[in-house]
Image (cartoon, rainbow, N blue to C red; front, side, top):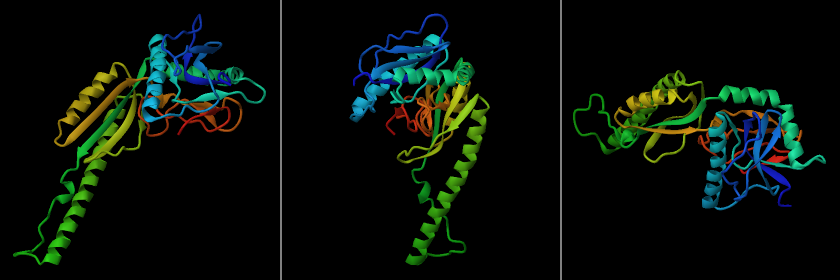
Length: 286
């Protein structure tokens, strides 16, 4: 049935009337608010099945998802964004809306506390990459070598030089990673370390999401400008985003197993990506 489930965008605080949203839902319809007390979840009715499609279609859905979250964030100043494709279905003789309201009631205090903690905060993403071109090709002379080395010995020397160069490069990257993380953590309220993403000809030294005040964004940018001045170093600085990586996770909507994940999965970009919930009355692509 077309409206047997609810697609979730975000949790927002409510003062006075229920929030409204002018951005269209993923299907082009209207976004609706399901309210319980001082909290509301922005939703739209949908089939009880994941959103699946080609890459371009999924990108359009993700953009639409983020547009709703961004509007709510701008209007309220604080938001708990859901990952893309979190859907609540009917279960246990209750409809999707009833399940969602019960979930809001059970986690009202925790959700409210997290919303207050995120007020005035934003997420930014930081990647620092080093150029690896030629790093493994560096050579070292053979100790005591006074003339041309035999072919076998020369080949061994080149292999050893490459291995030593890679090992030294890895040690330098580890030291830099610790320094970058410490310096950036000092500018942020919270940090999420993400899995590195492959980059052709580059070593991803650090890939993190930072929770910062809006005033701190400029300080992070100033620090990264200095980092980018180092030869062979590239910096990617993205955001500001709603705090997808810092929203938290709060029990399951239909009292089954697992929980409803408000955050993006570990290593995800700091904008809507394929979300996840464990099971029960919600599901998502992974």
